[in-house]
Amino acid sequence: MLKIAVASENKMVTEHFGHCESFMIFDTENNQIIKSETVANPGHKPGFLPNFLADRGVNVIISGGMGGGAVEIFNERNVEVIVGASGDAKTAVENYLKGELKTTGSVCHEHQHHDECGE
Image (cartoon, rainbow, N blue to C red):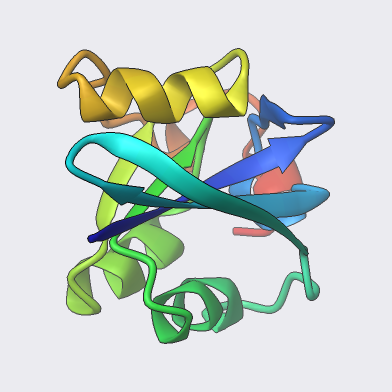
């Protein structure tokens, strides 16, 4: 089983991982979504969210953008990071399961909004 979390707002993938409204967490098996739940973002503190999600058993995180610090913690916790996603959160997960969603590798400090990412 694969647990995939999407940083989301109104069921859409959000651009800013740390400041998203909620995380949609999808349980998948055999490349099918079997269950989904929405967890409110418990708050942005450096290093907190990646561990919060990893502790919930998340294997993959999908987001529009993400700061380098968060990416490092996810990597340490063996959580796959997919950034550069956009659109409907559930569709992003389905595309990931089909092997069609690839990370663009964009972390927040590479774009003009770095102040908003809490770096």
